[in-house]
Image (cartoon, one colour):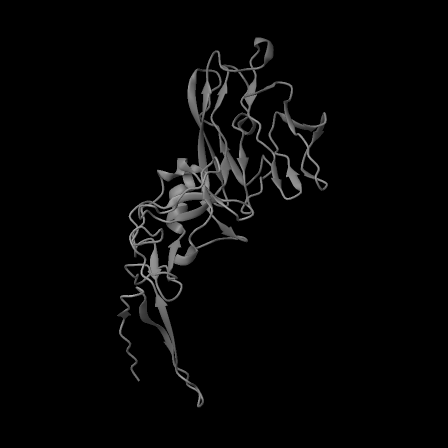
Length: 318
């Protein structure tokens, strides 16, 4: 039996009356049911208006899920949002990441962003999309009434999402972290220590290096000649890589007393609830009250500690 309801606009309230879904039972006592929704169309200036016109906003979610921090260095690689191509809108149920897509998002409507194009865009820059347990999430699902996430910049300042009909934020995770390095001609190059290399697993926990899962290609580095050489680090399970430059030259920072040596950049400890996790950086000792500490420190209620990084013999802190 056909069921047809018109879409009616109430000029006074701006509400739209629409049919959402219908289900028909086949048992003797089944009663046909239908879902009806009153929704407001999003106007120009609303932060969730689609179709979007810009690139997805690259962010990294904090471990406790309370905020998303923007990553400006990744923004140049983010794909531009195209409705019906790399995101889909459905105003009455969670949108499928394929098929037909509504042209305009209504309040409480849904849109879905598949993660594959995002992962492909950042995989050579040390980032990946988020994991759920052991598996990469296949899509991000948003509802128009719940898109006001706590998005901040690297200084903690609030970032307004979609002020100009740009694309929504998407959560990424940093897999490979490090920095460029300098080594004196004839000096020793330690890729983990000199690059400040940290590689995180699916749960965001640092991997103890060296590791069979982490490939470090230093074949192009020549410490015997001036030059700038690339080092590519790859986390094999996710096929994520990142490339860092190593500058070799006379007069670059070396060890004390004018001898050649290694510079190393310590990373700050991280804190979650009552635990402080000490990084593992070759060439660096971390100390509390003059004693070297490693692993995880559990704090008592109200306890405060100061963690100090000290260079090991043969190393100099940047």
